[in-house]
Length: 105
Image (cartoon, rainbow, N blue to C red; front, side, top):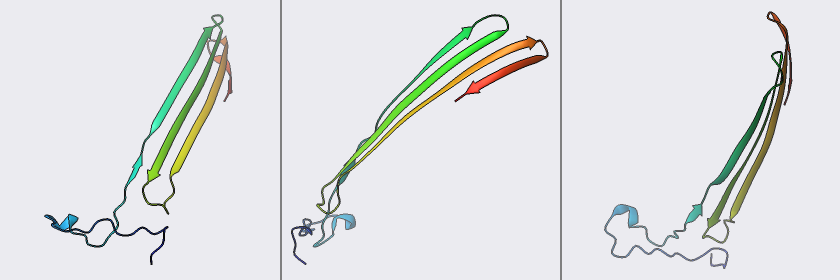
């Protein structure tokens, strides 16, 4: 089949020196990709008193993976994955044997 969407063979294998490169009348193509990621966290601790403690944490990240193809029927790709998360905690000590805790995520 001869079509602009199916390229002609580009590797004829003439004068090859190894079995792996002795492909004849085949198409070889390439792909490339990258991974680009960033992440960060911030945490805040506060000892309000001897009986009250509070902390807050926020995290975020981003991961991007673009990819390219040299074959026209194999489209390029792009994957982007952002994340965000947070936690808040408050602990109140009523007595040495009893405390209350509130957590929110």
